Length: 305
Image (cartoon, rainbow, N blue to C red):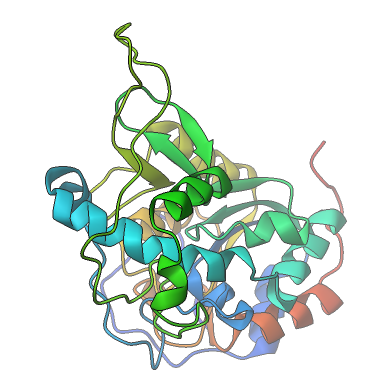
């Protein structure tokens, strides 16, 4: 276990990870903001991007999606298969433990890098979906929003039986953003926006539809970032669960907490970019660790109004 406080943190190698007792010692009595990553959802059957044993992945960028119809067709074909798998997943013990900790006043808010909505399904109430949600679709031209169920019905009508011809939807090559590995997507028909033309034309908008997910190369909306910072500022400490912190969108909240002098605890199966900044790290699975924390962490002496 090690302690870091203040804004200036030396760039030193991470020491050996701590124990569960170290973790409890750091977190006991604190009101916690929580940052979660894909590792929290692996026990629900959703593979992560960078965990031990994860296959190499090459996610589509925002520039590819908006700039090339072939990329866009390929993405929607894969998503049409993969989203069904994510849609039928259920919260695991880690999700439920975080919801119980929120009920008790230990967790005051949760920032998730996941798009699977499983925290809300488990009962967590104050959740910032930093990278969006897989179950919503938006039009890049007029801003219309649709549920993924409605878009799925339209895609199925345009491509009858497509999902059934490419294999089972529980293929392990399904990524956390509901993107399935489908090699042949020629002929797949993409649905454009069917809302009224925003310029008053006689036909539909026909703008590009995009899942309400922050793609690589795209910026997280400022209001979401500000809400996440506010959660960290309102808490006594930060717990990171199931994130390698490989991208800046999550790591910045660790840096922010450290700069404010708040303890940071990291629970992840492998090393993370935030380990050297953390007060304590535990290289362990999130489901079992969060369940154990929910069993031993008492409600703080004072809870937020």
